Image 1 (tube, each protein chain N blue to C red):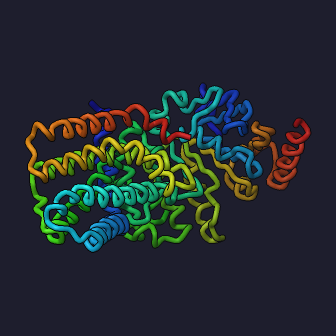
Image 2 (cartoon, each protein chain N blue to C red; image 1 turned 90 degrees about the vertical axis):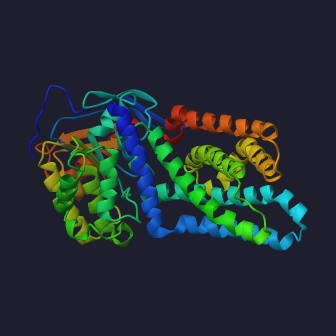
Length: 246
Length: 227
């Protein structure tokens, strides 16, 4: 995958701190991603990966630090950020009593999308769900719900796509289908951040690997710097050095 | 202008979504209706009253059924947003977040008015009281608006908690007391055929409460739903 550096990074984070009561989850984290980059944010459970993505998605307010997406500062310019951003979590964010198409139509109205019908048909075809568009979401399998969740996130054609553990609960076939869809999505000029603790998925898709540990980026490497075989050692080394600094 | 168009469109989209989902599932309305009808039936059997006393308790029985059924509806309405993480989907939309409040509030109001439209004729038949008086209907609408306005805000607040089913009534009932008193007293006065001068203070109190609690969410809803 090619990375297209531009003058200003698409995502720029400096000194990000997030506290929940007395617990500090992110401790002065720095991060940046360029246009077209696919960053895999790796880390153990509880490292703060989801918290970080929720801050980028303007679902959570930073306690301190500077967070910018496409030059818009969070949380002050959250509405402008939301217009440029798609978010997929391990929950599908879809209504079970509506059909797949009705769910997308609802989100198209919220985003005031022009040519909504064409866009809905395009994203449904992209994720292979066009045939099932009239079925109620509660009748979908977990894999189908996740594919529709990606269609929902892609509906406004976002510049930034955030994927929070999208493989959670998927069987092998559904995970393989998701691999194909994400590979297709990432070939476009779109910045993608994927959180995962599954290194094989990260190795398959990402152009850069960042390890989040103890509330900070402990290590970062581009695809050209390490091979897939070295990824596990890179990850373990980053966690060990973060633990040693404690 | 463009911002206000987006706001109105988002409000209507959420209203449409709630009505369409309810039309399919029928979970919320059926639960509210069964509960409200059980309450008036229980009172009908429990209170073996003469016509004069019956007229004096009508207002109280009606509002007990509306309020309890309404609380059930508010809880379920926010539970559907928590299910499958849908609230996050709404919060990700590039619209003013108070549009989410107004969409949910309007949907809750429609559900409550539907329940009331079913309960009133059944109550009239069971208790042999004519409830179709313009003054009483005005109190029902104003009381429902006030109840749903504050209820939707507090339901969104309680939705973040694990014990939301228990938390909502605890938060709601102290705040809703002015609406409850004004609605019960005003309804009773209209049923007793009191003059407008005797009822107007209750109507004014309800109007003021409605305006206040429709304005407050414009300022605070963003903070209510954020992490």
